Image (cartoon, rainbow, N blue to C red; front, side):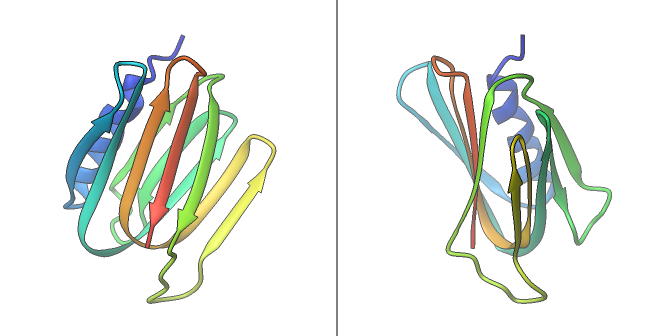
Length: 123
């Protein structure tokens, strides 16, 4: 069984590696989240393939983090997308998703009662 708190730990590690700072939030032990605030917009990507999520910096290919969420429900979304370069790409199909764009914030949260993981990229 996947420990959902591991999701937040790995998002915090990724955030630190891309130069961001984190703020934790939540409502009790069953709903927790973290907001990663970057000093500037960064070209980031997210991919999910059947429960294996990869967060990556498209500017520094050596910076990425893989997160195995197993059979937990996964939601990926984009808010206030801002495009400095290229285009925003969002693809969702069944359990798979791909997001690429320029973002200033990443928000990740889990609900252990419903075994749900949500990651939102904010422009």
